[in-house]
Image 1: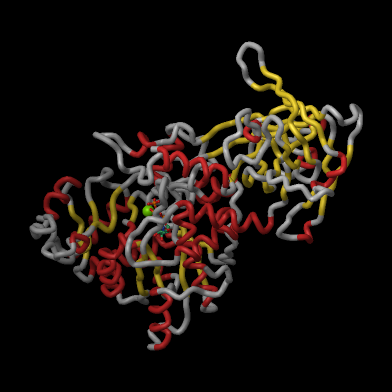
Image 2: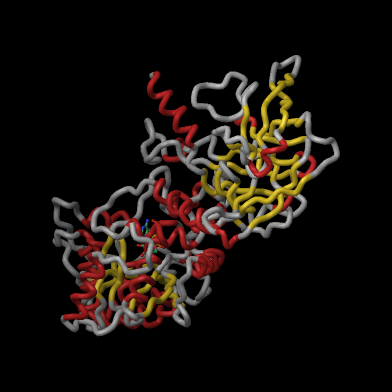
Amino acid sequence: MSNSDSPASDFIRDFIDEDLNTKRYTRVHTRFPPEPNGYLHIGHAKSICLNFGIAADYGGLCNLRFDDTNPSKEEVEYVESIQEDVRWLGFDWEDRLFYASDYFEQLYQWAVQLIKAGKAYVCDLTADEIREHRGTLTQPGKDSPYRNRSVAENLDLFQRMRAGEFPDGSRVLRAKIDMASPNLNMRDPVMYRILRATHHCTGDAWCIYPMYDYAHGESDSIEGITHSICTLEFENHRPLYDWYLDALGIYHPRQIEFARLNLTYTVMSKRKLLELVQGGYVSGWDDPRMPTISGLRRRGYTPEAIRNFCRRIGVAKYDGVVDIGLLEYSIREDLNRCAPRVMGVLRPLRVVIDNYPVDQVEELDAVNNPEDPGMGTRKVPFSRVLYIERDDFREEAPRKYYRLAPGREVRLRWAYLITCVGVVKDPHTGEVVELHCTYDPATRGGNTPDGRKVKGTIHWLSAPHAVEAEARLYDHLFTKENPEEAAGGGDFKDNLNPHSLETVRCYVEPSLAAAAPGSRCQFERLGYFCLDAVASSPAHLVFNRTVTLRDTWAKIEKAAAVGQS
Ligand code: ATP
Ligand code: MG
């Protein structure tokens, strides 16, 4: 797969090429139109990369527009987080930050124009009655008894709706289209409802608010958008998008739909993510297990990795589900390139090197990134007492287990070869609490002057120099590939993974004591980690595991387990 920034070709770009060739449009102008009712997630990243990416490829422009027509669910916190996330992903709307609420007066005037043209009417049916009148896919709808109100009466009532003379929900303005249309969206859709709610931009200036379908296309038109790219569920709304623009006789952008991103082991709707936040199932929108941009950022994802992921998945016209492994692949690939290697021990086992001088400390050279010699080397202290990973020792070593075991020799990364000569156990529990080893002074740096082969290399820390830290080890938030698949009457929350977060006290190299919040590194053999930008402090380091490395031993064990069953 290509990792270059060259534009991918896809059906949307084909449509745009066609429109430029036929001169339907002579420029390209897109927009990313989030509703500020939650934090952005990785699905939005797909839309952001697409809209800003297309604008960049065609030398065009992309606006950021808040689709803020629903005051009861929208908050300033969301408006701010959305801007931060788009910027962090690497995109710039320059001076083109807009709000649909900026257009409320114009939208109102256009509604008046439609009333005057006999194309909109005030309807007094209740929400339930409107639903009953709408009919079904197989049954045509029924006309509202208010459908044939005079223009004068409609103008008067609509103006009084705006003036606040009627209670919430008592009346709506509807487009007068066709109650027998095979497309339910065309059966006299609601354009305005009465709602007394304070809006984050317009305050209490309005008590009527436009519906999404009416506001969206008209906002696109006002901004001179050429290609209004949205997700597939709006395909059935396109005739309505076109109808409003044609009925008003205003500039007409082209709506193009693409398939939304779905990821395995993930829910993607803001409503569900909000439920997780409000129910305390996660620590917040930026919990590192969340598929939100802010969660991924805190987890240690880079903007490059997310952009590469979006390029890889491409855009399609049919819904599908992308394996979350592809997202993990993208971050591994990027961090492999740029993250310095360090040593950390998650589950320490004490090792005493019996033949190493008691007070001696050596500073050994360690390579910061074998993928990039330019990243240089650093010193790591070595002494008589070490920590190694508990999992790197087995009393009974299975076949192909090349790590430490009684009588076995192993290489300590960047240091010496050691041989296990003794095992100390807790007399009560039988648990191994300490190993005794000898080292071969001729093997400094990990070489064997006599040419003997030692297969295993393990990581380690000098115990007196190691810095204590907290590591947060994350797993998928859900246990099921499709979290929506819940048994008998349950919902996606029944599939939450109780082991999605494991916290361990670990040890890290002294070089990490001064690391900056958010900085990323690879703990050799364990995975990529980043210093938590929220919870970490110099006195209490907190590392988030961004993603594991592919563990060859885990693979062998897994294969063996499958073979046995
Ligand atoms: P959600 O269902 O998560 O609440 P939404 O579509 O209601 O999402 P908006 O804020 O309205 O969220 O979306 C802003 C833009 O992002 C829209 O153009 C929408 O189509 C796009 N978008 C939202 N979710 C996805 C997704 N999973 N994949 C691709 N694009 C998406
Ligand atoms: Mg929405």
